[in-house]
Length: 117
Image (cartoon, rainbow, N blue to C red; front, top):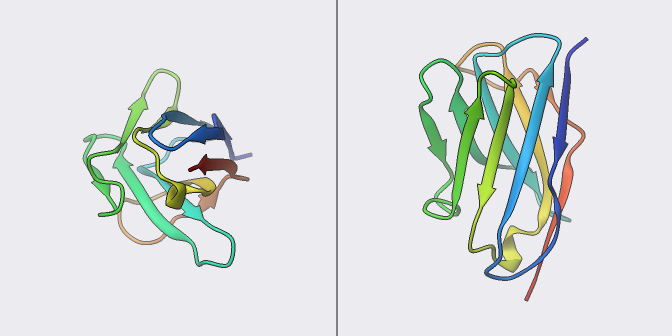
């Protein structure tokens, strides 16, 4: 059974940092990503990483502030978020792709990130 367990969310002041973790179990995937959804808004892509090559992609809104990384031994993906802004407030979801291209195949339950001004 595939599971994606996110952790690391919380409340932080603007300018602060948080690190989200996504531990995958049940199988390995070709690519992992982070998405977020703020109240009343559609889900937004944040970042992704290819498992074998380590190639990363980022949304323009987080470039230079967020870093996605992986730990192969732990089958875990991280999202380091620095210089957080109130507009980063959202539920953050980890997603896993069976194949590098296309849409994701699995998604976690999400972790809340709240940035106060």
